[in-house]
Each structure stands twice: as structure tokens, then as C-alpha cells.
Length: 276
Length: 289
Image 1 (cartoon, rainbow over the protein chains, first blue to last red):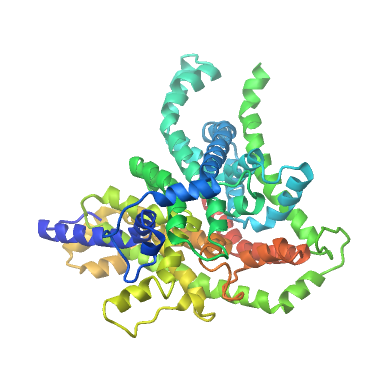
Image 2 (image 1 turned 90 degrees about the vertical axis):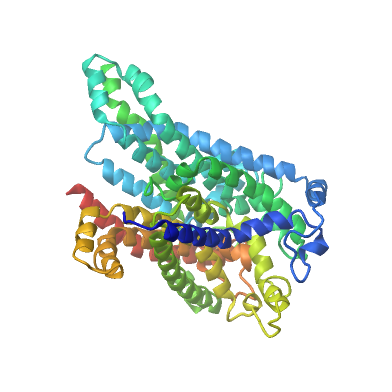
């Protein structure tokens, strides 16, 4: 709602908005700060904010004890692999629905999206059994495929909303000039579709990176990504807040950075296209 | 070649369509079948009727899980929508650096709660976090030990859930606010209608579709909630914070009771269907008109 607001009011509002932002950001900030403390400082009472001896020890210790570079690497492979594979399958599908729509297009789209609404628990066990049967439990490639399938409806949906924004007239003009399907895709669609594909990649990477339900249930050691590692680290044998925070910070960092440099795409992606 | 060009659109759509359908609905069919068998540690395909559902609804643990889902769902959806709306109205006041702020408000949603749960565990820990901090400020009687109290622990799950989702709801509502026709608002302002009335009588009613989508998204998040509980309480103390998803998980993977897991999964599915199907149906009708 566009309204006239005085400068003074604006400064006040902006200040309040940043205070709210800080409150929302606090748990994340706290995790990052704690990762640089010693275990004693991490549970100090009263809590220490900035007045502690900054140390990188936690990162070294966690790496030494559990080799979390491997979990980080698994996260990268699983999130990256499932995103790439998903995009390869979804781009043609979204292209088809956006530019050659049929009567059934809307129905197909909504039914595909409906699968994402259903709780994953309903399909967990059969997939678990299939993984055992095929001997691919705790296997990175299997997770790449499963996460791709899980997120495919969202990828298709996102790409579809982007492709719909490409004006159809341009394609018609190209067809009039005798462009073949191949030329149409190569020279006209692709350049216009790249920004949308990039945002979809970002969203899906985030979703796959954060995935805990599937990774927790289908991995043990070899293929476990950071989320599964953190979940296992925090269980019974007492909490090591500083070390746990170091592992968590590693898992948070890529998303914070990606999100910061692609604010618009992050907002649009997480709201599934509602906010442009 | 001609044939190919004509059918390419359908051919390239097919893999996604088939994958989504078979992968989800096919396996749901399997789960449905198993929920009518005596499967224990291994699946067994002899149908025996509704015995698993009878066991399920006789289980006190399942009752706790359903109760928790209700309490959590109502509070989580209600508070997230309210805070999200307030944040959106506030952020719509021509705030400088709005783009950056929107990103910060959305960060909790962009991060896995498994990961941000680390800080939450610290904050909710009576000896370390908020309780210790406030006591350190001189309020010696302050207590905040919900996470260790079986009656209150579920509310800590609500708090973390609201923290995660409010920014997301804010972004949805912000889009809604921006899509309201500015001319109508100007006309109302010229007529001297006070701002709060403009919001309650014009802007909010015209955002009804956004409220509906936000409700659908939040309710399916609530029913699917798994990370939240695993990250914060692991279902404890005891099974006080179990939700249907964690119940199913416990049955399938630590109790070796596939029949119970399958029947609880089916009940969850039916709850989702009850909410989502009417919505999809109305969407379909609206779009086809």
C-alpha cells in the first residue's frame, strides 16, 4: 500500500524492522558465535556474547574425530546431484506445459503438486525396503535419485511459473520466420529461461541441502550428509554445544551466503513464486 | 520427423508425470495394502482387515501424538499467520533496505531445523539459555523449563515452528498487500477512513485467497513436522512431544512394527487429504472456468 510517510517515521520504522530482524536472526547468530568458543565458554553462565577468546579449535576437533569434511562433501554431492538431475528432467516438462499447453495441463500440474503435499512417511517404508533389496541403503547415488524424485514436482512447478512469463508472441514471431523447434529452443527460449532456471536451482539446492527426513532414514555413515551427522551428534551422550555449533555453522554457511547474494531468488523460491 | 515434432511436448512431459505419480501414489498404495496386514518386522501381504487401525486407536502413544498434532497445528498455524500478517503490514510501510530484511526474515525457513535446533536447544535449556540469562539479569525467580516438562514441552516445538514459518507467511502476505488495488485505498483515504479501518474492511478481506494458500501450506507443514521434534526434543520427555510423523518413524525403525507404521501413515495421509483435496478441487474449478 503506497502511502506518504514522513522521513522521521521512516527512520523509526526501519530501526524497528532491523531490531525484529536481529531477534529473528539471533538463533543463527548464536550458533555461529558458539562455534568459536571453548566448551566451557559455550555453557558459561551468564552467557558470553563477544567477550570470549575466539578459537577455531572446535572445527579442528570435530574434523579430527568424525571427519566431517566427508559429511560436507556428501551434502554437496547429494544436493548438487539431485538438483542437476531434477532440472534435466523438469525443464522439458515445464517447457511443454508452458508453451504447448493442452486441456489437461492444469490438472497435471495440480496433481503433481499434490504429491508434494502428502506426508513423506507414506512412501518411506517401501522405498526403504527397495533400497535394502537393491543393496543401496546408505548410498549417495540412491539418495540423489530419491531426493530428485521427491522435489521434482516443485522443480516443475517453479520452472513452469517462470516459463509462463516468457511472452508467447516472441515464439510465434520466430515460427512465422520459419524457425524450427530446435532453433526456437536454442536461440530464443534458452537465453530467456536462464534466470528462472537459476532461481529454481537455488531453491532446490536449498531444499535438498536441508533434507533431513530422507537422509536420516536412508543413510548411516558412508552417504550421510551434514543434517544426518548433526542429528546423530546431538543425541544421547550429552551435548557438546561448541562442537555441535561448529558442525551446524558449516551446514548453515552455504545457505546464508547463497541467500544473501541472491535475495530475490531466495524470496521467490521459498514462496514458490508468490513473491516476485 | 513430423510425428516427432508433434509429440515432443507429450514425450518430454511423460517422465516427470509418471515419476511423480508412480513414485508417490504407487508407494502410497503399497503402504495402504500393508496397513491391512499383520506385518511386524517384515512386510507380510495377507490381508486381515482393520486390526492395525484398531491397535492404533487403542494405543495411548498414538493418542498423545494426535493430541499434540491438534495443539501444535492450531497454535502453529494461528500464531504464524498472525505474526506473518503483522510483519507484512509493518514491512509494507516503505521501510528502507526492505529487500535485505525480507531475506533475513526468511532465513529461518531457508535453514534446516535440524541445524538451527542446536541454538534452540541451548536457549530452551533451563540451566544455560534464556532462563539462565534472565536470572543473570537479576530476576532470580524466572523459570523457563518447558522442554523438560512433559505437559509444556510441546509448546517449545510450537515456538521453534513459529520462528521458522513466520517470515515465510510474511512474504506471502506481503505479496498479497502489494496486489491490492491502490486506487481503492486512495479513494478510501480521500474519504477520510482511518487506516486501521482500511486494513480491516478493505485490504484484509481482499486477501482471502492468500489466507487460504498460507493456511494450506502451514497445515501440511504441521502434519509433516518431523525435523522440528527430532531436533528439539526427540519426542521426549518420554513420548510427550510425539507427533504422528515421529510415531510412524518410531514404529517403523525402532519398534519393528511395520503394520502400525503403515496404518499411522495412512491416517496422516487421510488428514492431509481432508484439507488439501477440497483446496485443489476449488483451484481446479477456478482455473478451468
